[in-house]
Every structure is written in C-alpha cells, then in structure tokens.
Length: 138
Image 1: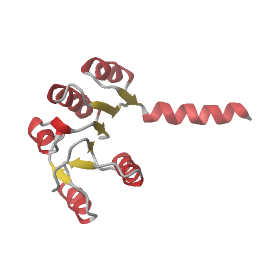
Image 2 (image 1 turned 180 degrees about the horizontal axis):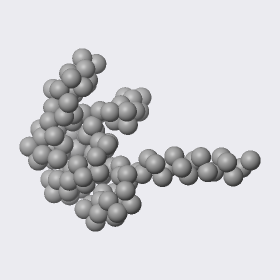
Image 3 (image 1 turned 45 degrees about the vertical axis):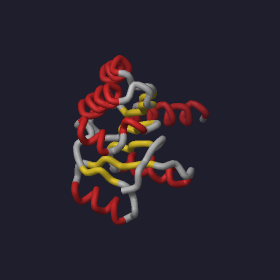
C-alpha cells in the first residue's frame, strides 16, 4: 500500500461507498477504503484500490488507514450506531479532518453533529424531498 497523505478515507464499500469511490477516482483524489467484509475488501483490492480490512469504529483500523494525515473521511456504512461511533473515533484521532457521514434517524443526526461530524446526509430524507419536489411541479 502506498504512503498516503491528504487522502480521503471511505468507510464502507457498499452501494454508497462504491459511488463515493467512483467519484474520487473521476476527480483524481487519493483514497483508501476501510471495509469489514473480507470478500468485499478482497474484490476492492483486485480493482487496484488501497484497502484496510477491519471495523471502521476501531482506532487501530483508522490509524492503519492513515487518519492522522487524512484530509477527509466519508462514513458510508448502513448502520447509524457504527457511523456515530466512527465519527467519535475519527474526531478523537484527527481534530482537523473533514467528516462526512450518513444517518437514517434525525436523533442520530443530532448526536453526530455533537460528536463532530461536519456534514451529514440523510438518504431517506433526500430521496423523499426530491420526489416531493418533482410531484409538486406537476
């Protein structure tokens, strides 16, 4: 694995994480993936991506992903509790990192802000707002 600095850490390589990685590649932004599932991590490596296999809530795993020198972290797992704990861990390890995460619940969103998240996306809310915006145009 190449030495990274000023990179983005992508936690979770599911549907959302894959789209984030595609966009990072399109823009030439350095990144590393943190993925818990062995098979998914292996497939990501086969695509030539830098991958740390493990739980993104772990300080050890985030340190292995170079969090101390990372510019940003995209927390894209489909589990609010894990995302919140990863926000807490990331902020503890790097006070200056830009943290973007997803949340499914409004109460968790508030906790993520308190924990130090800089940007929070609520996929269900975004989808419903887009649908309503289109329906109300008719």
